[in-house]
Image (cartoon, rainbow, N blue to C red; front, top):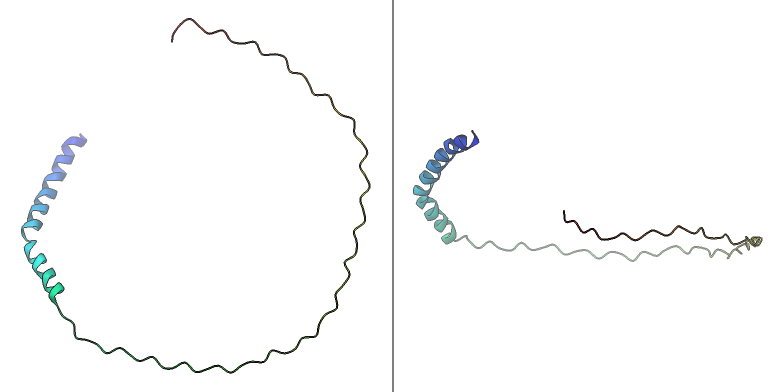
Length: 102
């Protein structure tokens, strides 16, 4: 069903394409006129001079005394923990290759 609908869509599209390609010569000629168009030379505007800024004196801030950082108390040592035994896993039996093919 979709195949028959696409043919009815392609035919008008083809006719529009052909009609636009036949009248396309005037567009190319107009584009050439735009390329050959010469614009008058415009004078470059002069930029105003930038005024110099006055030097600004920064106020003198008083020096702050250095504070002593309090020493952190030492943490007590952690008691020794006994080592845990690692669990042993049972051995996995090896698989035998099958003789039948899928």
